[in-house]
Length: 596
Image 1: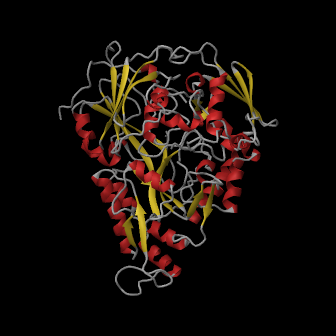
Image 2: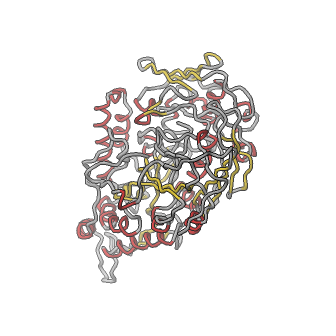
Image 3: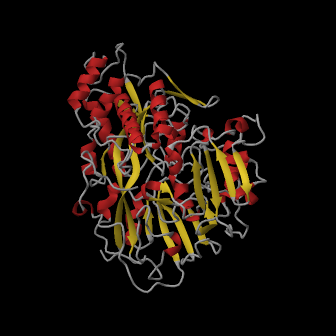
């Protein structure tokens, strides 16, 4: 990916393939109304600030979060968007992306695919150095595959996609000492053999990994200790524009310019990233504390729209928020999702009724200034070739919700205002959501009232919204006190849903698996899907199936806003053609304060 600013939004990130949960573009369908510039103030993806640039300087970035960031600075190990946001300044990505988020040949590495042979060749640039001066070689591209495939790997990327590499499973199970499908050709070339080749390989999927890892720095650290090591958390070397220099755990990171950066030393001297609570973000922007704000909450747009010291840039995100229903457990020993046919939320009409009861349109208007819009599919419209704009989704219809509940046998037998289950027993749904701003908690309460209006008793899992990290820990662990939850995904360059919804996908948080779903997912990434029209049709069938099953239901598509201080010179946030990190310049010694 290009070494540029790619702000992430308040989500779990999904790397190049789909999660870490990480990265957006045009929304243009009949169900997704494009919001006018007048309505939102999102006048441009680019600032026009000009003037004489100062020498060097420090870019000050505010990372909006109400929780400490975890501080796992490894592409192979990080799990949330906060660490991903920091890592983008010190990225070890080897591929750059061109239009449609496909691999180009302008980055650190080139990709050649031999479809009939089910092989790919990666060739890296020569004479490139890590930030510590050590030569960058193909060993550094190979090493991440061994990290992820190791039996003691503690991360979340040993998934269906990754297991498509020949020999990975055998190595992971310690039945082989090497990954037989990975072959070093010379110091700058490697070959990967796959069990199958799918079109997702051109989007950094199919098992292909998009980052390098500094083998010379990491090789003596046991894989099981890697995520906790001081090397990863404090002093990782990098191929990126900036190098992590100082870390205040969970609070701030200082990065300095990488003098060995292969595109040339950055024009800035430093970047300082600080965690800023959502409640304090608007005041910090007004007072000129930061040059940029990452993850600014769209429901706080009104607080900053008139500040004269910033440009508010906007773009559509490759992201969606969803309502997930817990339908089973993840078998950690076998690495598969086990759907429970007797799950509490197993009734399809119950799930549909819950979504029909949600007045999403009122929420997007009242709380988000239309910076969120009701989603109709589990794929953002930015993937224009694959997104199914014909799906109606679940528009607000409380009468339909009541009808479905009646048909499913959920009725208010004792006339207390709440429905009992089909067996006549008291029925309560335990709902989990992330803690956030006052408005976000009002939104959660609004939905709880929506559900009450159709006779459903919904209460918070823990009595209140849950802190970000703890929330995802509970979701991943299939907390027994969680029946449904609201979360979000940010899609990477690869739109394939396998990493999020396959039977053995750890991120399949609803734990829904079926033979039909497996077939649909395989079809999306089949050899036949090398034909774009075929793949588009396969995506449409999957989106329709998931909409009908209503196990993971999209709620919002996202438009993100990025406040940029007027001391930042000519800055563009386009996902492909945006300003690259090494080219950022400042035109004043300190961020400008607002006179408003």
